[in-house]
Image 1 (cartoon, helix red, strand yellow):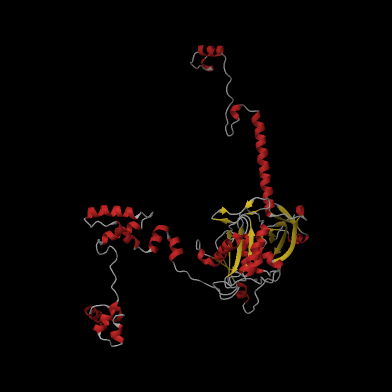
Image 2 (cartoon, rainbow, N blue to C red):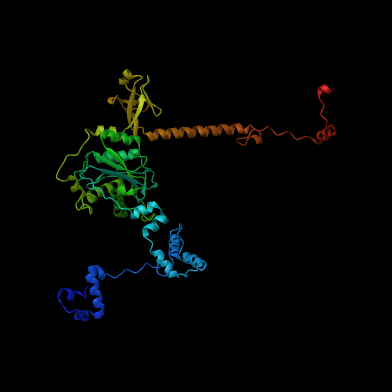
Length: 474
């Protein structure tokens, strides 16, 4: 096109334009004819046939592609060796190693990924992703857990790898709440993170609060717990569970986890890189909690976010608005932190987890079904509701005035079982001391071994006839 432009636009003679472009007049005439027939597309260079299609039969090309899609994928050398042998049998032209390699490389990467790594890998690499953003603050929150790349010291001084639960506002990318803990994620840890996210913070630099319209979570047992579902109904929060094995739906909060793991934790002692300890751990759980909280409030929420172009706190504030809030913190605690269980009032009170709870108010409700709410961190007291109305606070008389957790009860049960097993083992050992040696093997029942006979007795016994006689035969 560049060679013909002087002739087409500036009326330069075709011979002169061809000489200036360094082409023959015959080539210039052929190009001009193609341009006048098909326009600029007529000057486009025709594409070459695909590798292998000009010189090899189509059946051979399809066989090479089919072999390359096998699982596990064979090497190109293996494919070339098999095809070479087959070409001799079919009287085809024998392909070179380079020709086989070119045919394999021409296969779509998406097709190779789907054939070799499966649908999940294909989906994560090649499927289109819909990037969604909420229309306003608190319209949609995301909550998730991650195990941090750091080791800390627990209360007993042992190394432990902590977990982090975060709650993020989808619109502003602001972190609304978090929870750092040791041990597997639980419904209580999730509830504590939501409690901090919803209620007002003491730090004025962290204004994010309120009840979200939608909470987006995964299918973990803590998120799918009945306790969280009950709290969501009471707070009028719509729970949305992401598709199983589809982390794309929680991409924003996954990006936050990666930022914390790569930006904050490398500056702290005990950081793990590729599973290896870089520096010895020195932080306790409260110290790590303080470091993450300071990073979220002072750095992450305050600096401009690349996706939205402004600090998350400013995006959440907007031009000023009032979030939907619970009436009191006690009401929020009763819904989030306290677990609801149905019970019946007995004459001696309410029985729960092996404890007995009593309050004089219960005297008028004997035999009535009630709902109790309790804090798993302290089960020394429960709150009793009758027909969704608060009735009273009942306490366990055996543990009045002291904090008793559900884990304490479970530990006491385990200790009781261990003591019983130990006593059973000791009693069995005492009995075994008085039994013959043949009976000391557990799980066997046999008679004592007969006493060895003297030589004289054995000889006398051998002299007796072997024919059996009975009393009636006498």
